[in-house]
Image (cartoon, rainbow, N blue to C red; front, side):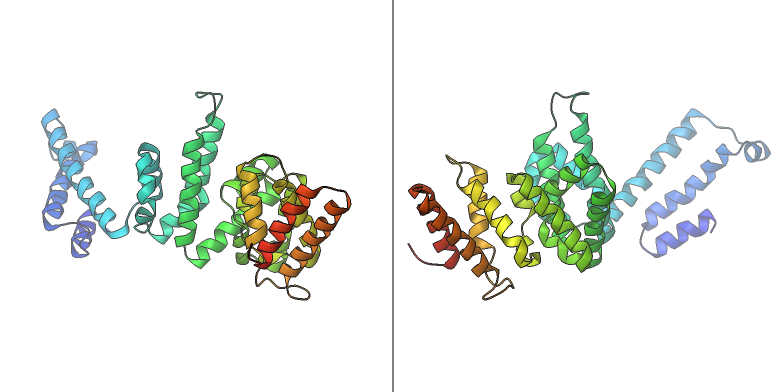
Length: 311
């Protein structure tokens, strides 16, 4: 299409208003000034005044196109990130902003824009800043999960498979950082059985190496993918965190996870819940045999809460 045809088509589709379409037609004349042969043939010369007029007309057209795009298609992924970085208070409305983002931009946000920016903030430490922008990274991670919740099933599959690719191909640092910032075990439902088992085994291996608060968050929904053989090791790791001295967020999160995640899960003889209760009862007996009344009492409390026995 020639430029004149493009202008007419945009006016017909309401991409350009009649006024802006007319301005676009005016600019057609100014574009001749960038063709030296045509400028000589038509005996036209480029001057400061003409350049200023052309620049102002072009800016008016760009402004209208930008406003039109915003109204039709919502925010871009890059606009969302800039808003969150420049205005911390935007977190209170970020879910509303995300509802105005197209599926295409949601996919960009989840696959590229948020992860890339997150790692940029991480690697910036030591170059220009003494440490990473932790609050900025937390806002990005929160926005990621909110955007994931709004995305289509197809986009969710792409994003989850992207994590699988990272797990298989990237260095350990990137894998561990990505999964605690962005991944949740409930996302495994978007993978095949074999793929889900691969990721599950990786998560259980990490838990065995040492449970962290971030990892407890990442394994939300893992119970739905556990096999009976997985249960004891997971209960042991969570219980170990519960038995640490003093109050701390990891202890609280591990206890909540132990209590809330088993009801209705498949398994032998009443489901995983019975397996968890059985493992806790083994620990109760162990602590009682060894005269550790405090630990036995704590495990008894947790066991009763798992089973729903009132205090």
